[in-house]
Image (cartoon, rainbow over all chains, first blue to last red):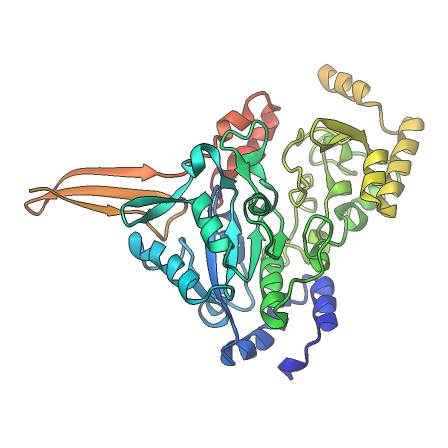
Amino acid sequence: MATKLSRRDFMRAAAGSAAAVSLAGFLSPYIAEAAEAGELPPVIWLAGGACTGCAVSLLNCQDPDIQDVLLKVISLRFQENVMAAQGEQAINAIYDVVAKYPGQYVLAVEGSVQIKENGKWCVIGEREGHEVTMLQAVKDVGSQAAAIINIGTCSCFGGLPSADPNPSESRSVADIVKGKPIINVAGCPPHPDWIVGTIAHYLLFKDVPELDSAGRPKMFYGRIIHDNCQRRQYFDNGIFAKNFGEMGCMLELGCKGPIAHCDSTTRLWNGGVNWCVQCGGVCLACTEPQFPNWPIYERMAEMPIGPATTATVDQIGFVLGGAAVLGIGGHLAGNIATGRIGSKKDHDKEEGDN
Amino acid sequence: MAQTIKIDPITRIEGHLGVEVEIEGGVVVNAKSMGMMFRGLELIMKGRDPRDAQQIMQRICGV
C-alpha cells in the first residue's frame, strides 16, 4: 500500500494536514517501507552560525517519535547535538560519507555560513591538526551532495546573523554552493512537519518538491498568515489593538502577517496546541528572506522589500503579486482614509503621549 | 613530559565547543575551552528599538 503514494497525494496531505492530522504520522509507513528497502541516502546535518533552535524544533516532532525518525527512518551520519562521536572522529564521519557516497547523500544545513576572515568566525572542528571552518565544510560537503535542504531562515537567506550590520558576514548556503538542488525550509525555527515533510518528500520521490520564488516548498509556504489569521475578522472590521492583550488585529503593534508565507495558522505548534498570534504575539514573518531587518514592533506601513528600498503595503502587494495582499493594501488604505487607522506619524505621537 | 589532548568539536551540546587539556604524569596541568563561533548579536542590536531585544537576543541559543 505504501508504494502507491503519489506525489499529488503527498502534496495534498502535506498542505491539508492540520493540527488534528499528523503529517509525520501519515508519512511514517511510507518512509519505513523505503527504509526497509535500503533506499534511503545518508544525511549529514551541519550547523554553522546557528542557535540549534531548528534542531530542537525537529526534536519536537511527536508522531512518529523523533527517536524512530533518527534511528530507523533516516541514516543520519553527522549531527553534533545528538551524535556520540566527538573530536576528530566526528569530523571524519562527515568526510567518510563524502568519500563513500559522492552525489548520493543529502546535506541538511542549520545556521548561516560565516565567511569573514575566510570562515574563521565559525570553526566546526579539527581534522589532521587543521581547523575545519563551516565555510570549508559547506563547500566540501555541498559540492558532492545529491541535494541540500536548508533548515531555518539562517541557512536559507542569512537570517538573524546576517541582520544589519552583519558582523560575521553571514551568507546563505545558496551563496556558497552553486548548481545543486536547494530546498529552503524557512522559519525561525521551522515547524517539525515542514522539516520532516520536506525530507520525506525528497526521500520518497528522490526529487525536490514544488518551490516558490524564495525556494520554499509550496505545500507548506503557499499561504499567507494574514489570510487565515484568527484575528482576521478584526482587521476586516477595522478593529485594531493598541496594546498587547487587547482585542483586535495587531497590525499597529507590528504584526507582519500580511507578508508572511506559511501555514502556522492551521498547522499549529507544539503538537497542535497554539501558534504565535493565537497566544497574543505578533507575527514576525520569520519565514521571509528579509527577516529580521525591520523594526519588529512597529507597524508595517513602510516595509523594506530589498536593499535600501521601502514600500507601502500596496506596493508590497504589487511586488508579491498576490491578489490577497493587494486586497489588504486596498483595505488598509481604506481604513486610513476613513480614519480607523491613524497615519504613522499620528500613531507615534499617540504613543509619546501615553 | 606533558601530553596534549584536543577534542574539537565536543558533541551533545549546543554550539561549537573545543577543549584542549595538558596532562603531565597523569595529572591535568592546564586546560582551555574554546567557543568557536561568533555572530555578534550585540552589534546587531545597536541602534535598534529596545523592544526588538526580546526577539533578537533570545535567538542566541535555541535549546
